[in-house]
Length: 278
Image (cartoon, rainbow, N blue to C red; front, side, top):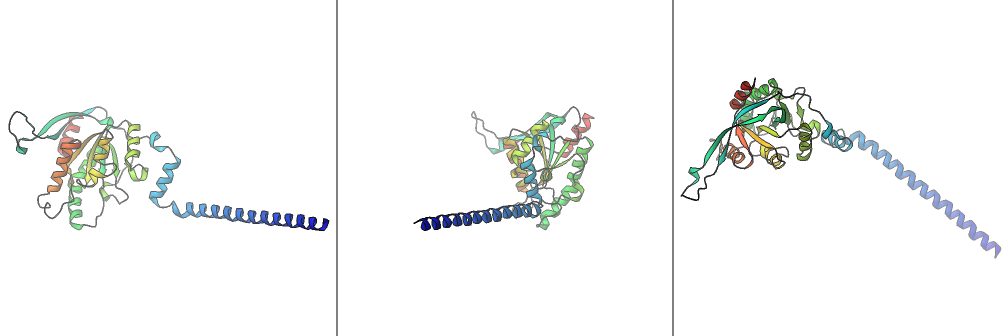
């Protein structure tokens, strides 16, 4: 009996030691796996630009504390804009032909206004569209950004992880939303709030797709409460075969802005307003 009890105790302690050893081995293997995986996750996973920005945003509160380095011109400008008013006269017969554009001059505070350049890319797989875009960039967007820089306007570039055209590269004080990690609606909104911006002037490509529908584009930012102004001769649409000759898709996109989301202006109107402010 005594011998049997002794043997049982011996087996118990032996099994317990084996169990402890097994637990220790499992813990060491898991610990090594976590450490090894974490190292290679950091070493290889985060060098990709988009994921690196995500890591930065999760670990810092740069959105509300960032400060724009370019000081906007003091004062306000008187900018000529237009929108569209559909005819709806209850007292007499009317048709769409009775609808009209409404032209007015509004006061724009340069300190609370920013220029947003959407997808001004250096290349595009559709050669014909890219040819038209490059021509418009040279004719309109380069003069536009030159004008904005001369008057110290706040400028944001939103290329959405594609190369920006060579002659439209951001300069000191201008913000690439991709690099800043704020190319999303809420992130951009938080940044603009921190800067006191309430008016966004849009240019870039394409009017019927990205300028309207990007997370930092007209529709989403209008829903956040911003005053929206599209420079209608500083954009083109991606047309279809039936609309290309008359560029009707672009005209319709501009019309959509004027009837739903904001106002439009021209590069000449902006140049005149800035010149008058000098």
